[in-house]
Length: 99
Image (tube, rainbow, N blue to C red; front, side, top):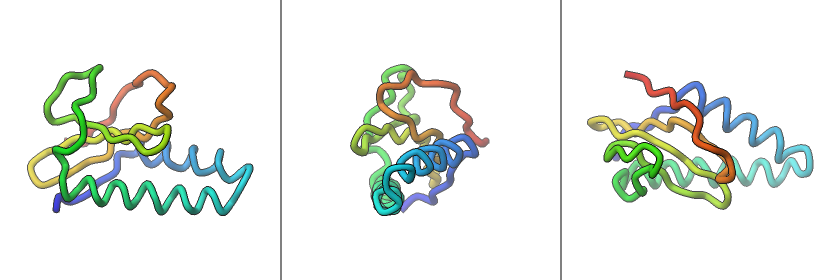
């Protein structure tokens, strides 16, 4: 299993999504947190199972979808870094990838 790291932008994305969901339902926001974290942990076991991000066409930058959200991550050695968590309708903004 790869070590999981989150970029600052991914953490900010995640917090913004949780805040937005919690406006309607605190319970749904909690469930979302658990499901995203579970998805990320599963991805760390099989990091190459995600598809290559079409906009970047880089073998090491991949994504998985959870509901309407893209979890974009980079694979580097034994590390899987979550770069962004974005609604699928949004265009891909800048990625922050730690070196």
